[in-house]
Each structure stands twice: as structure tokens, then as C-alpha cells.
Length: 155
Image (cartoon, rainbow, N blue to C red; front, side, top):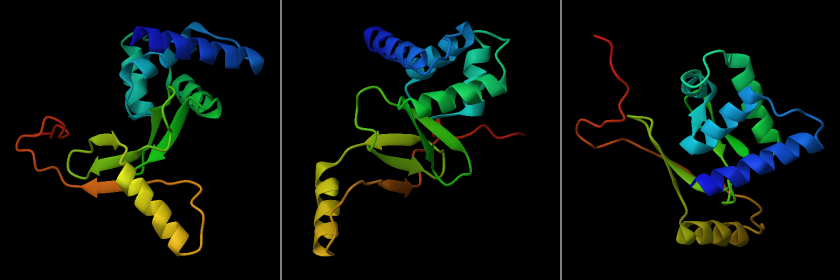
């Protein structure tokens, strides 16, 4: 995993230089942690993660860095119907992977299903279209008793 992170860090630095931007220590911390976590994450969640490493990092820096990653094609913003944008890190995999979102615990699971993708192409063709892109989001309810992903409830 560390080799994979170093590759994406170098790609980030190169794209910054090409854009005439500087690689600051705060950006480095944010980007490294973003790829180490390798999950869908909101700006607020990312802020908590990086403050544990470098407490002086602020919300605006995290927000701008995540937007920068999106602009560089290293992250994809996702909205799963809860009013919060989450950023999905993109290494070299297909950014068009699909998602199963739990409505109960909000866990997000990435998946690729060739049969489902093929069916989408077949439906498009049958209707007289050529499929250019797809976005499949399945919303389900967690059936796990005492699910560890449930948000903590205030007493």
C-alpha cells in the first residue's frame, strides 16, 4: 500500500508543479492521509483525521485541497442523498465503480458487477442509445444486529 501511496503522492506533486502551485506541508498531510484512508470521506471527517496529525490545519485548507484533488482527477465527489459531499480517492482504478449505500448505518461499499454493467449497455442499446457512462447506487438497510457502523446516539 505504501508504494501505491508514494506513486499517487508523486503524481499529485507533478500536477501541482504543472499548474504552477506549491506543495505545502499541510497539503502533503491532507493528501497522504486521504489516500491512506482510501474511503469515501467528507470534508468534516477529513478535517478530524488531519487535525490529529497537524492541529493547525483548518477547514478551508482541507476543503480547497479536496477540491484540488478533484480538479486533478485524483478524487471524485459523491453525493449519496444525505446532503453531504464525500470524496472518493482514485488511484488507477475505474472511477465509475458502483456503490451500495446503507440507509441505516451510512456505510458505503464499492463494487463492480460485470453482469449489471452489461445489462445497462443492453438496455441502452434496446432503447436506441449508446451507453457513455454509468452510475449505479443501490440503497439498502443494514440488517446487522448491533452494527458497528451505526452513528453513536446521544443519551
